[in-house]
Amino acid sequence: MQNLTPAGQNLVANVAQRYNLSQDAVIHMLIAVNNGNGTMAQFNCPELGGSGQWMRGGMTMVGDMFNYGLKATVDNLCNELANALASIQIFPIIPAGAPGSSQWWPGNLGSPFSSGSQNNIRYAIFPHRLAVERFGQVTVYDTQDHRIGGISQQQGGDTSLTFSSQYGTVSVNSLPIISGSGLGQPVVTNFAAPTQSPEPYTPPPQMSSNNPVDSGSGQNHDILGLIEKLAHLRDLGAISEDEFNSKKVDLLSRL
Image: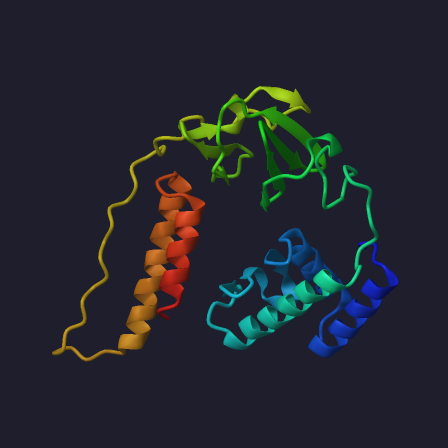
């Protein structure tokens, strides 16, 4: 079980009682919110509907998409845990640069001007350097003259990363390694073109005034179908993860 400070243990016990959850479930969500720097969380908690996502002040996704009570519970829980993380020392302090530390990159790199995480990979961007952590192993890359604008993970299950710079989209594996073993070679190396042609976009059917139906149910079905098509385009590499998430939030707001 995750080590907690006495204040952290009291928080978990209190939250578990008030939300009628096990302490393991609360700790799972606490770690997820902490990994998202208090602004987002990706989790897989059976007591909260399985896999889901939370963004502070924005989208909350749960396995049971139309269970609005569960969404409200997750949103309230994550907001409370985020506030606690900002005001209470919940986890024991780990020395900078040590495995498990929030400052997981080598100390000589200083403070990054951007950092984040995707799935099981964390990254931090510094002047002329990029640090990437996977399963506790840190690799530092020389970014040369690239001006990095963002990091994205290739879809499809491999561990390849790309970044955007003034030269376009570039594979992290193409950068010289300063220290560490790297992430291995990606399964897909052509990041400019999808492996197969994306399915053509099919507009949703128009409602006819002469054919009365349950328009709310039909619209929900059409929106979910569009999200599936967008996910397919994302998996093919035709659109980025950020573009997919932005459009998904827009579509879900219409439900």
